[in-house]
Image (cartoon, rainbow, N blue to C red):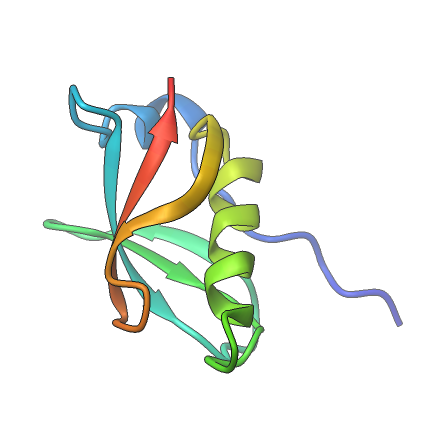
Length: 93
């Protein structure tokens, strides 16, 4: 059975959360049952199936957020929080 596509928000709403220097703050939940991007009052919650092991969750977060329409990522996308669940992603606008 194929995995369902991730539940993604409106791309314009996600881009609106990117600050003027191209940074997007996210909170990550690795090992989730499904891949989703959810807006909360103060953050963007990104749920990924990948485990938090050897950067697998970080790579999955970048893929899911890029598919959601945030933009492209250059080099190491995690500007801050490489091993934390709260991350600051650098988006190439």
